[in-house]
Length: 139
Image (cartoon, rainbow, N blue to C red):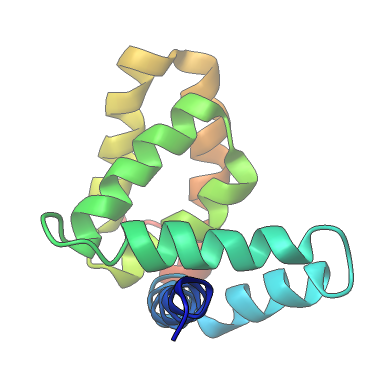
């Protein structure tokens, strides 16, 4: 096996591992939709790259649980004002064991560091997901 073959095998293995984690966290529908939207477009290679590197190399590392990674992602996505990405990651956070209250508290906590406009925008998206996944909040 040449070095190039080893690199390809490693990338293929990372992609397969990444796809498994991505589907477990984000759900099959989310992943299938993202891949279908990118299929045959300039973004298709980016989807493969992100699956192999972010999901297959970062999310598979030891040291943090998926739950912890989801909590971190909420804060980072609030800071980046990446509300469309946040939508999927709130669903993923619920799948990884975060509660409605913890998602809300993460956004409130982020407001102190990222500002009210970023947190308000994030909360709109999170609220949509929380209601879709868990129903309306009970008083």
